[in-house]
Length: 370
Ligand code: DP6
Image (cartoon, rainbow, N blue to C red; front, side, top):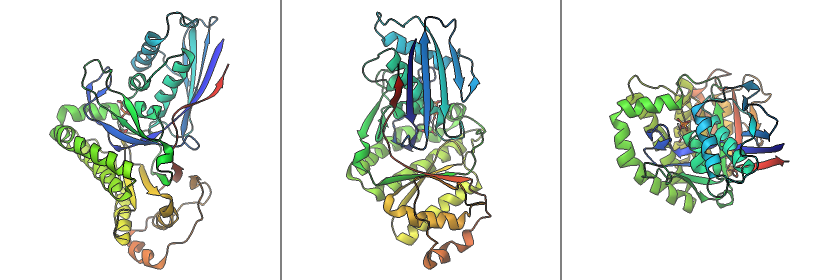
């Protein structure tokens, strides 16, 4: 019997991936860039056991047995085995996969990215695969390829039809920008209405704006974003992040029938961020929304206390216990000047379920091996 356990991180895109040019190999129509989040508060954990005694392959996700014959799982497993040495002694053994997320699955919180990155990292350890494995994780879920690396990561779309040049690369490690913090404002952690996979397929089929974004906007934005990250220029980083999120959701609305992912609370959060930035006369805080209503906020450590005082004021918790998860900060009341700006924006308690406060972190790591 051989056992491997790995944990892998969530990543949050600041330049979004939306649209495939190949559905099976999961090849995107544009490059994307993301920050990898620390595994301390949000991660996937996967244990894989291989044994000559197992009669069949098995897969459990969050305690529930799943169908092992899913095309994406199959595609990852086939590619790992193709790259393993033919003399690998366990190549023909059956496996049992047990995977769990310590955060809500399929609520637009990038759970498939962490899940597939973890699965592929664990398979790669089990079958002793050398070299880049992001192109394997990509076959599980596109965004998963970026969770294979820590820090700041670019998924290069590649041009070849076979996909071997569609890989993720690390732009900068965690230590490059240690002051960066991330707040996940959880509006709703239930399963999302339509998956990213079906949403982006519909966008490719029906949105003209999507073609314009992929060819005219993203290439320039990717260069500007890389520059902002390399220079640690938060002002530019924040502006590009918000512009790209807004453009992505504009494409979702340009899709027919439209994919509506943001809700009224999401729009209120975006309004609070813009008002806050106006008060500060610069972009101190950036929002980005994936295929769901939850907001991901990028900001520097120096800004967290004050911004959280505004969030707590505008979106009062329904109870104080467990509202702020993850990294803890001193809770301070909103100051008078900000209160004047935000008093008309106050919501009823409970509009926000909870907040996860985290930071940029490393890629997958092994926790056990036997
Ligand atoms: C909005 O990677 O979940 O989060 O490749 O079909 O599995 P599939 O889609 P997925 O899409 C993620 C979309 C996004 C943007 C992003 O993470 O870049």
